[in-house]
Amino acid sequence: MILAVSVRDDLHSLAVQHAVRSRRRHDFHIVESDTIAGRQTLSWYSHSDEDTCGIRAATLLTSEGVPVAPEEAAVLWWRRPRADQEIAAHAGSTHERSLVNNDCRGALGGILAAAFDGQWISPPEATDRAADKVYQLAVAQDAGFRVPRTLVSQSREDVIAFTRQVGRAIVKPVVGARGPSLWTRWIDDPESIPAQSFEVCPATYQEYIEGCRHIRLNCFGEHMYAALIETEELDWRPDLQVPISPWPVPEDIGRQVGAVLNRLGLRMGVVDLKLTPDGQPVWLEVNPQGQFLFLEPLMGEPLTEHFADFLLSAADTPPEAQE
Image (cartoon, rainbow, N blue to C red):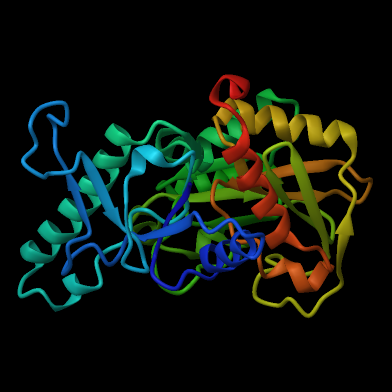
């Protein structure tokens, strides 16, 4: 059995579920992380080896209302696990909403940690650690990648000194927030910005990497599928009406990316690189559970089927062969 933990109506989970089930494998189930509250979604009992009086050791309710035992799953796709509860939006106070969200999130994570003994895609600890942009930059640099000179700071003076050192620089969030996307921006004149604006919270400042060739590299286990996105824009995400084509991953870059993901403990990852004018790859970041479906029609690559292959292969591989 394959389990995916994600939010209601998550396109990626639904598309991959359809791809797996179209192969007559009907044991792919989605557990919705944002609809736990308001229905009998989960249960766990600590002493399942004793007389349980009908209490099952661990049970989760799928998006289709089917109770499943997480210990029977071979693979768990940890896609979007920590969402707020839909029903919590109608709770009467901030404290009540916090209680509902925290207890649902904690119970789901705890039950899976206790009951599931298969292969995580990817483990929660590795996913959380790899999402740290500062840490992953250090790991990528250790693996031999060039990385942009980077400053994380709240100091106006430090940012001014940094931009004088590196020349043209960009600014982007350290982590970001739910809601509207915060695109990468230029920071050409930090001296014109008051100190209070910097002090509100830390931000990430990086040297600008010259070039117009961006690489979106999708890593599903040992297999990699990359797109070349050609644009003069600083951030390619707002406008996909630009040339996008498949990009064969050179062996040396594939080895370097694999080394980074292995060090981060990730079984999958969506990596952003940028090619300098002379073709040198520069590591920008990896998203442990990044979006990839939007590229499928743009680059003509069946990424949904590739990801389904990846999950099925993991599910069919004996645990001892995964060591």
